[in-house]
Amino acid sequence: ETGVTQSPTHLIKTRGQQVTLRCSSQSGHNTVSWYQQALGQGPQFIFQYYREEENGRGNFPPRFSGLQFPNYSSELNVNALELDDSALYLCASSLGPYSDYGYTFGSGTRLTVV
Amino acid sequence: SQELEQSPQSLIVQEGKNLTINCTSSKTLYGLYWYKQKYGEGLIFLMMLQKGGEEKSHEKITAKLDEKKQQSSLHITASQPSHAGIYLCGADIGGGADGLTFGKGTHLIIQP
Image (cartoon, rainbow over all chains, first blue to last red; front, top):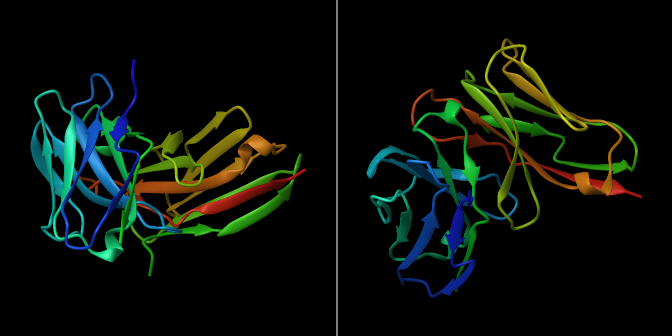
């Protein structure tokens, strides 16, 4: 059974550009959530997708958007990148949309905006 | 103020000693998770606690949940170099599909 895989592992972008990060969920998991972790901070919840629909969102602007595909893999898109978007982006998958299902995290994508 | 406070922020412990990390919520807890993170890497699941008074152990790590105090503690017995890293508590404080709220983490260093 494979775990959660994220790509790319590292990325450098210029302010104003757009970026897409990818996540393959663990086998059998139908829910994916994304988190942003700034240096020295805990992860912050961006949004969650359950069966291809967004069903929960944290305090992030609309330029953060996502998709979940029929195979339950997911993308995080960030438009009009700002310097403060530099962070580790973590994807987590779970068996269902509520916390009692548990979350498996990937290794993250390190995004640097210059 | 933070919804989930962890203490201490950092901890230096001599190898072989015991230690405790605390996590306190300002809101009702619907589930509490402990994760370990190596710098810049993903989160490794340690334990999930859901019921008040629940206590779980794995190898030398024990976690407890005090629902009344809205608090959890993580205790490591006879610490080893492999225990070094950042310990994060994450909690479901919304009871819905709002993901986990995390503390800022406790940075643990084990001195030989």
